[in-house]
Amino acid sequence: MRHFLTLKDFTKEEILEIVDIALEIKKDLKAGVYKKELENKTLAMIFEKSSTRTRVSFETGMFQLGGHALFLSNRDIHLGRGEPVKDTARVISSMCDMVMIRTFEHSMIEEFASYSKVPVINGLTDSYHPVQLLADYMTMVEYNLHKKPVVAYVGDGNNMTNSWLMLAAKLGFELRIATPKGYEVDTDILDDALHMAKESGAVIKVMNDPKEAIRKASIVTTDTWASMGQEDEKEQRVKDFDGFMVDSLKMCLAKKSAKFLHCLPAYRGQEVSEELMDLHADIIFSEAENRLHAQKGLMVWLDRQRG
Image (cartoon, rainbow, N blue to C red; front, side):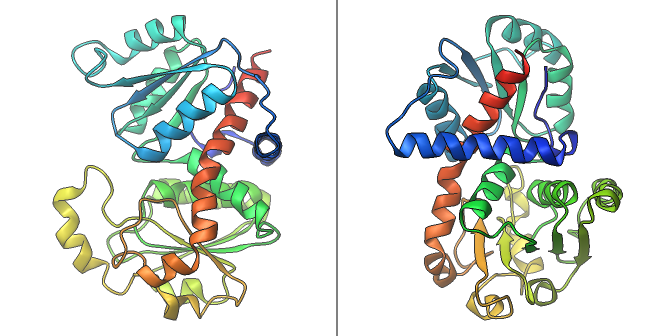
């Protein structure tokens, strides 16, 4: 049995296999073919952080695969209201075939997985957002951007940055991260990525100049400056991130064929300009749709590992 908590736990071959399954599932869906690979299976979805894309994609995905998804907020279950994580894990995993958790502390999902009898999927923690990176890489493949890409990430050193680090380190491509001073990536996670990069051949660079990161890049990406739980910091962050908005002028520094990605939700006029969002809307909303297909590929892969 395998859990999907971070891309660090997966080989390059396994990541590519999951994406290949997702691409095949998407192809079938567009042709009107629904393969009930998870028929009569149940996915428990635990949300301590709300989300548009995560809930819709997992719930729809399970339905299309022939299974059923249960939405469980922290108001619906005893988790966080007195019952230990390990007890909730034992109970839910005895009744369901798979569990997806979207929460704050990464240690919570690690503890849950250690007591779960079924695969646990990280729908997002403060440390990692690996399902989003599956969708991002799937989009790169579809747009033929996956062959020796140079990716520039501009913004906060957050869970998306950490997940890009894991993907680059595993697949062996160049990643440049530009953050404001004081918002750099976690040093332990960066050290992990640099260690893995020695084996994969990945080139990882961190800096504080967004223009330097974007220059000659083939993919430029960003994320919101204030994530959920950081609302009180928003005003200060807007000041600290001055000059980090990705707009058409900065994109001119990238390759002419470069594409812009955003995991959404996007705050136009802050981390990205309105104009740039409109110019790259096709790929951005394909990326959003691919959360559905990538996660179906992941769930099918995890189910197959169980035999």
